[in-house]
Length: 213
Image (cartoon, rainbow, N blue to C red; front, side, top):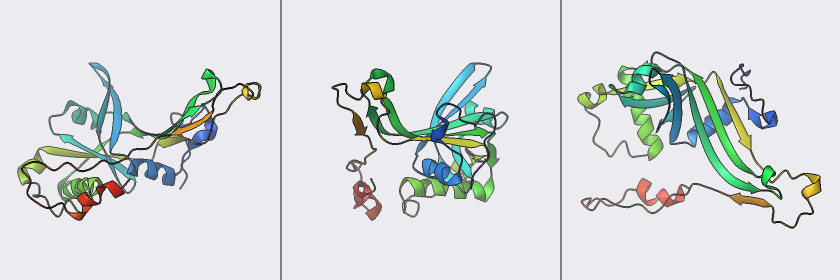
């Protein structure tokens, strides 16, 4: 589904890289473990990294009830950003170097998620981190749930910007004797590191970690 851009989501710089469809937005969020939330208050401007996940047409976060950011987000608008680096683009001139990336920006106001919906949302986060983990761990206690605020922001005002491909060299630079192309970049899992006090055999979702890629 395509969304009509608003004045603050319309991408003007290299507009050909703009995407306003839900498919692109969902894929960028689903591939992320962290987002950055920008807001300003009486102390100035802030940009806070925090865990994120998607449920339907909302992006979710969570935090302590006493968090300054949580309190602020429930009363004011903010901007959420996510970026994935996919490669360094080396051109024949310094000016035309670039990066391949997938990015998203979401505007709006967070709302609190309460009761059973909040518990379900936190279980969804656990399943995103490692599918199957929720069934193994000690469930959260009423006290722990009461100390945690779950928030969500609608994906109704958002824009994505994606760059793929090689360098866009000026025609006059094509004969310059410098290597040009892309240095691909990817996030890769590493071998699990068990807690020294853990005597439990690794479950499938741990032993399969390296294959997740």
